[in-house]
Amino acid sequence: MVLTKTATLNLRIDPVLKELIRIAAKNEHRSVANLIEVLIRQHCEREGITVPEQQEMFAESNND
Image (cartoon, rainbow, N blue to C red):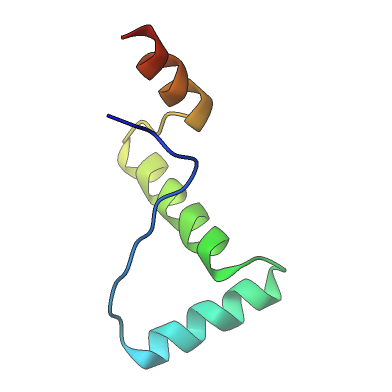
């Protein structure tokens, strides 16, 4: 599998939620994409799901 630095995620959400995430990102001086990534990482941490760092993923793919 070829790993890239980023991947595209397209999804449909309620327009109100989209506006809320835009406002939240602006308030934290983040991009919407970055805020969503942070929220996913926080959720995984709470749920005990290990999230490897990107460098770890590249190192594993180079060892194969």
